[in-house]
Image 1 (spheres, rainbow, N blue to C red):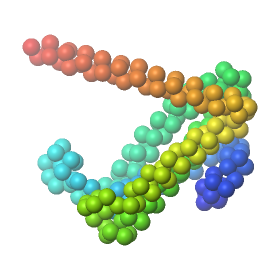
Image 2 (cartoon, rainbow, N blue to C red):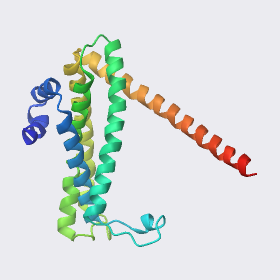
Image 3 (tube, one colour):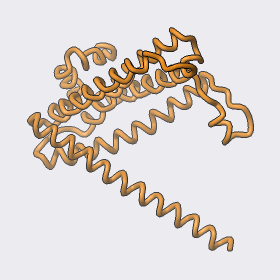
Length: 217
């Protein structure tokens, strides 16, 4: 089911998204995030990682291996799941305001399943690794695969936006126009909320630092 769902997002997007909305596969969504995280880690490892950046914060040499990739993948899944959960809340509330009537879990599961598309631009990078050798793709002259990856990334980005609109339309349900409007409004709302939360975090950190300074002064 999982592989057929991934393929369906490309060849049968509307039917596949309708199935996702009906089934609300949160577990498969989390598994998808894990697959994306591990695949990114493996490709990044193949392209070569400068461990000096990590070793600045450690007392000993960092061993970039499978354990590092797995831990990084789990942290990635946790972070992205929270991020998508936050964005799904905003989409859910705005879609409700626009007259939609759907389940929050359907939206969240859909967004997590759509994350598999982010692996498509990695294919040119993987071909670059295979062509130049592991650990050498990040060095030397610019590879032609980089231009291919940029084009593929743009196409995937546009397709993901289209699928996101279809997801909103099918989950709530709304007209295509209202779903697009809901998606745009949700993006800007999430941006504003994110900026506000960031500012509040900075204020809190400054207050803590000043408080510690006064206490030790």
